[in-house]
Length: 387
Figure 1: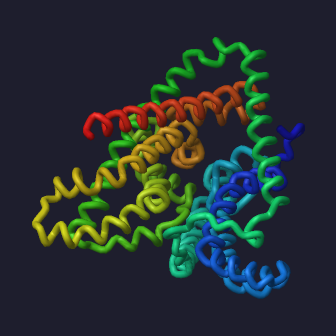
Figure 2: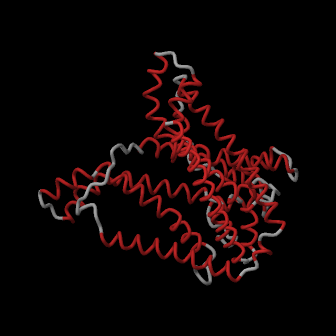
Figure 3: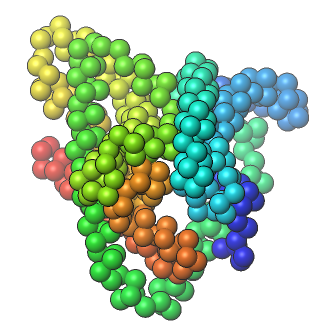
């Protein structure tokens, strides 16, 4: 933990770096395994110098994919609201935060709407460019041992980073748990916030099941759903402000509806693309055979689709729980007054009550792990009983 934390642009840049480091590592690993692994083996056999391999073979082959990675990170930073809200220091840390300030602080709605439209067009154009150029073949990307693809320095750096981050978080959490008054933290406000978060999670889970049913019914009917691939990193402020204008404020039912609609728009397509799309591509080839043998949609769903995507669905549902207990930026942009674990944590951070925020973040993380592995345990046990 940085003391004092560098609020403003340095703090936002620092957090964005930490947030995108893991994704960037996995993405670059997939690029290398998809395009370079065989060439690395051949280069090692012919004893090509490492410097020549990197600059004459690897860079020319992967620079486009690295540019796409840069655009993905740029889009994420451009459309993120939660990190600038916490660490931005109220100085328009990015375009999303600037639009948010125009709406809720300066009350200049016309300027905010114009900026939101420009931002939305910009996001769509870049998303379309990424979709057209992101054509990685991720099949059979097993690791290949080659000295050209192994870096002890990078491995040590990654280990040091992970150990510093994980151990630092655990030690700080243990210190806070031993020194804080837990009865004060887990008081009535917390249980109200947790109850509301659970309600949001259950409704999101139902909505995602409906969304998944639509995806697989469209697949069964041989309808194209490629348009979903163009939907990338929507603006939190644009969606939240639209819901703020469309639905009445300060009413629990409408605030609850705002949150569910907003989270569905913001996260469902992304979760589908990351966790379900690879399975959808595999199932697509099986649809023709099902239609030839006149398999009903119910049987197609239960006997063919569910066994192939059940583990992914369980993980996605657990991620929806994590979103339900941690999201706060959308709620502020939509003018929602519902108290959740996320908004309670954000209020602690804003008032510099870091110990309470640490405890609630640890609770959210641990409860997510418990829910995921409990669901996975019952799923695995059910599979054993069946077979």
